[in-house]
Length: 416
Ligand code: CAO
Image 1 (cartoon, rainbow, N blue to C red):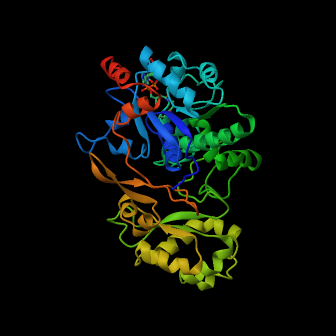
Image 2: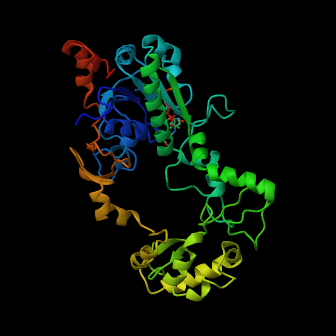
Image 3: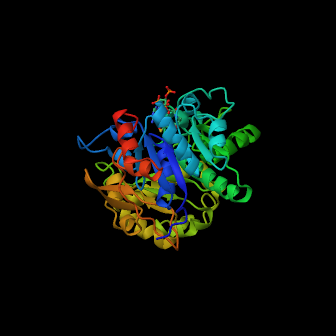
């Protein structure tokens, strides 16, 4: 299949999650992504949390599919020379090293631009350039704390809480991918490359936009009517943690279903959409609420919203989460079962939509990975295995014009 990014060559100087998630996405869509790794060790995630002693860890395989691997010691003169040639022939260099690492290696933006003025250099850092924390190294949870997610997640009587979703890592990688594609389109118009940077703090904050909305509302009116703290609790001058409250104009909560005593995921998320109040009352067997002034408007319901949720839980008590959703869907009520990772892994629909795919790896055998969450009408990315460390070193060097003898010498010098 002629994928749209076919012909775009990417030097993938990324590691761990934020950068690899970005380049993996571009590889799915056809880019030739050459992952540059340190000889002998490679990306640290190859070894992290291994479940099979000699096989690359799932952390690596699930973030580096569809790529080629080139081992290169870019601190050695031979390695630098190879990287220079590669820069001369590529379209994009993506990196997420600690602050200043690329400059210390001798590949500043100015130097790369000199080697190839059409090159797009894309970086992930913890904080934006010019920020007073821009010298910090950053991992996922650090970013969630810095970007406003942790202070607004969890319950009001507990500490700031991080999300399991990789808001700092993969989310930043997705932002960077958008930046790269934009710069590529820009280059088509100007003929020039440019620097693209996304900080993890900013990418987290971008997803916490509604909490910034709430901060401003709070400062103006002193309360937030959709939070559980309203109207019985108190507000300070900062956005509180709202537990499982719905973030928009419609209240929602995680509600217990049959079996919750023993199954940690026997819950549904239930949303009370204002205009769906009548069907909700019918669905849960309380038609008398439809015209009751204590229930008929969102404003009237809010003071006793948790009593309403308790009544819905009574209705749910003899229904599994799946049975409940099957009834509620008929009434057009936005809801979902709370699904465990196990349920998702074996969900036939997720396999059918290729949102979860099985990949064959030469060492570990078959494993599951998350497929493309972006679906196209004219193409279907095929997810292939992640490369072994240095699997494509000789192939890439030969394509760069090195002779077999020169390649052997580089191996001897441990430069590749
Ligand atoms: N050959 C030679 N040297 C190499 C190399 C190669 N192929 N690849 C990397 N290196 C060197 C770098 O040049 C750097 O050397 P110096 O520090 O001496 O200049 C060194 O390896 C370490 O790089 P690092 O600072 O990126 O690595 P770290 O393990 O100390 O930090 C991390 C990891 C993630 C905290 C840091 O890279 C970072 O803050 N990145 C930016 C934010 C980010 O992306 N974080 C998300 C990671 S996903 O959770």
